[in-house]
Image 1 (cartoon, rainbow over the protein chains, first blue to last red):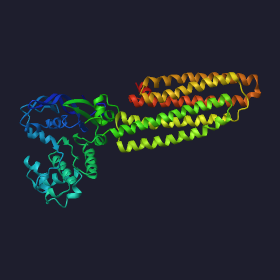
Image 2: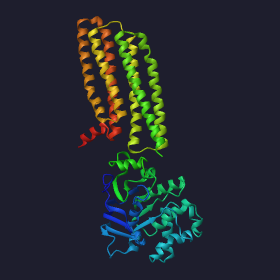
Image 3: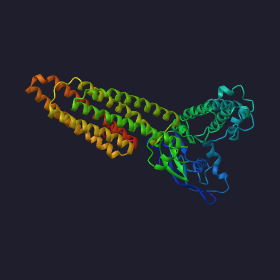
Image 4: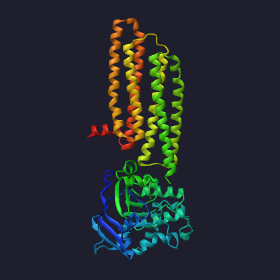
Length: 259
Length: 222
C-alpha cells in the first residue's frame, strides 16, 4: 500500500511482506508499505496492533529483543536492511529514534548532543560546538538552553527533555526520524511545540510517528496507516482516512467504536 | 466511551426529524389555506416559521457543541456537517411557505383549474421534503437520489402553470394581478423543491462521503 495520492515524493522506506514474531506470537502479518520521503506518516491502531513493532523494525531496534524473529523485507533507499552487508549502527545513524518518555542521558545538555557525533569519531571541539548549536536550534530549544549547556539535562522540563532528545537524534544528521508517541507524556503546550517542530523537520527529514492521539495524526501527518492485530488494514492520505475511510474497521477505530 | 456521543447524535437526528416535520406542516398548511382561502389558517404560518427558526438555532448549537467536544471524524463528522448544511435549506423552506401565506391573504380571484394544478405542485414538493428528511433518518441514499430526480416533476408543474398563466393573461388582461400572484406562489414551491434537493445532496454526502457537486466537478475534470 502507499499514500501516493497525497504527494509525489520518492519512496524512502518500503516493506514487503514483513512479518515479525515474538516467540509464537505473530505481531506483524505480511505488511507491505511504501513511505514517501520528507513527509510525516502516522501509524495508528489500538494497543498491541503492531504499530510500535513496525516502527522498531525499520531501524532494526527489534534485533535487541531476543525472542523476535523477522521475515520479509525492509528497504531503506532501495537497500535491504537485513542484508549481512548492512551495518546496523550506520543504519541507525540514518534512521534515528525518539521514544515515548524523554530519555536524556544523565550528563550535561552539551554532552547529550555531542554523544552521537563523538561515537562516530568527531573529536574537534569547534566541530562539536557547531553540531550542538545547530542540533539544538533545529529542535527549537537553543534559546531555552544556550546558557545551560553545562547543566545536567535531567534538570530540564519534560517538554524540554523531549526536544533535547530530538536534538540528540538530529546531531548525527539522520534521514528519517522514528517517533514512538513522542508527546504522550507531555502537557498541551509542550505537545504543541513538538508538533510544530515535527512540521518544520519535515522540510529536511522523513518522519514516521506512532500516536494514540487521533487529533495529533490529523494535525500533522500527510499519510496515515491503520494497524489492527498485526495487519495493515488501511493506508492512505490522512485527509481521506479521517473523512472517508474505505474499511469499516478503520472507521470504527477512529470514531471510537472500539480500541 | 461512545455511549454519550451516540445519545447526542440521536438527539441531533430527532431534532432534524422534528424540523423536517415542521417544514412538511408548513407546506401542508399553506396549501390548504390557499385551496380554501382560509386566511386564519394562513396566519398560523408565522408561528410555524418561528418554530422552524428556533429549531435551526437549537440544531446549530447542538452541532457546534458536538464538533467542539467530540472532535468527530469520518462518518460522524459527515453526519454533523451535513446536519449543519441541511438546516439552512430547511429554514429557507419555512420562509418560503410563509412568503406564500403572505400572498394568499391578498388574493382576490380564483381559477379552479389553475389552483388544482398548484395543489398538485404543493403535494409534489411536500413529498420531496418528506423524503429528503426520511432519507437522512433511514440513511437511504437511493431515496435521496429519488428526491433529486423528483425535482423534474416540480419543474414541469412550474412551466405548465407558467404557460397556463400566459394564456390566461392573453384571454383576460384584467386577470394580470391574480396571474402574477399565482406565478409567485408557483415559483416559491419550485424553490422549495430546490431546497429539498440540496438537503438530499447532503444526505448522500453524509452516507457516502461524496457530494453531487464534487462528483460533477470530477466528471468535468476527467
